Length: 200
Image (cartoon, rainbow, N blue to C red; front, side, top):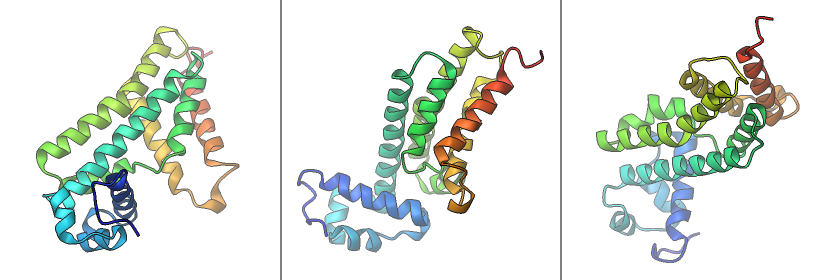
């Protein structure tokens, strides 16, 4: 059980870790402040002191931290890869699979509707800026190098994220080799489909 003082080192992050696990498992509507307080070891008063808007402000903090963490990791994976599309996309998908899923479909279709309008706009902008745009930039660069044919790189980046996210839902008995191996196969199929020589 956590200490009740939120000003101790890492206490806020541990609270957000627990809240994130609960929100991911149950969705925003099903998680109560009582659930969070019980697992963290805080009173309602202590929680409201640090998060005056209650559950909504905790959820916002969880989402922003999650998106920024994914964006930082994705940037590092892209930056540290060899300069070819296959290596970059494999590194990006492997990193995304090493994290807890963002579950963007549930997030944008359901949970974000519980946020204030300005907060929802901020999260959507962060997803676009930190997750989709870096992948789009990778694809644009590959088009410029003539590794792949000209295409709607924004659409492809979004589809790739969706395919990677969907691998978290594959039941264990249906996993072929590993989820990472399945992601690599998706990357290879995608690159083959976008190849400048595909019509040859």
